[in-house]
Image (cartoon, rainbow, N blue to C red):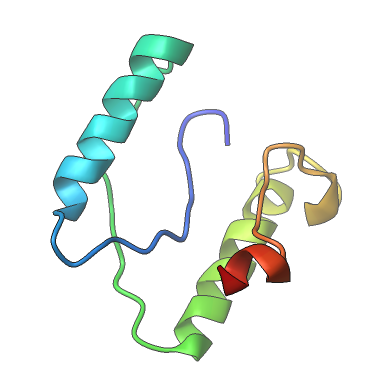
Length: 87
């Protein structure tokens, strides 16, 4: 998305999500000159069904916003392969 980011991210229990997101945004701003929106919105996913719903929402978002015709055409998308998930 041109002005924000959607991601499904798992955080270690020991580290705070706010600190991790803050540090990541700070690094992206510094090294890639990204100008982020203030704060962030998080949603706790409790089961596989909710994860799948969020995954489909994220994949469809560029299509809904008129940025591409099909989610597979969006060049700024990444997902781990099954081999990477198994690690």
